[in-house]
Image 1 (cartoon, one colour):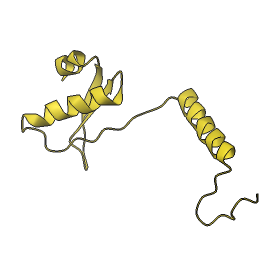
Image 2: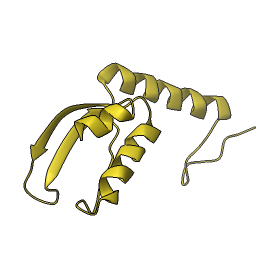
Image 3: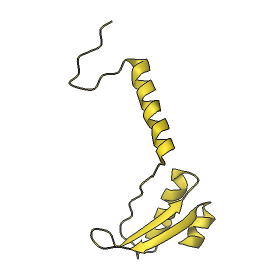
Image 4: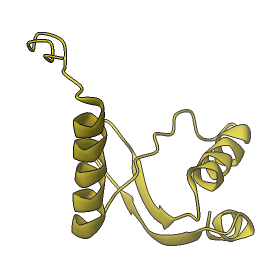
Length: 89
C-alpha cells in the first residue's frame, strides 16, 4: 500500500490490524479526495479486499474554519433548517 499510495501522491502514515467491524485500519495523507478514492479502487481491484471506507479527518483549526464557512453560508442566505420558523422578509 505504501508504493500504491506514493504513486498517487499520497503517503501511508501507519496501518493497524483491528478487531470488530473492520479488520484493518490504514492512515494515509492524500493530496485530494480523488487520490484517496483511486488508491481504494486499486486496492479492491485485486480481489483481496472487499470493502473500503474512506474517512476524511480534519485538525482542530481546519474544523473551526469549516464551522465558520457553514455559519457564514447560512447567515448570508438567511437559511433555516426544516422545522424552524421561516425567515421574515
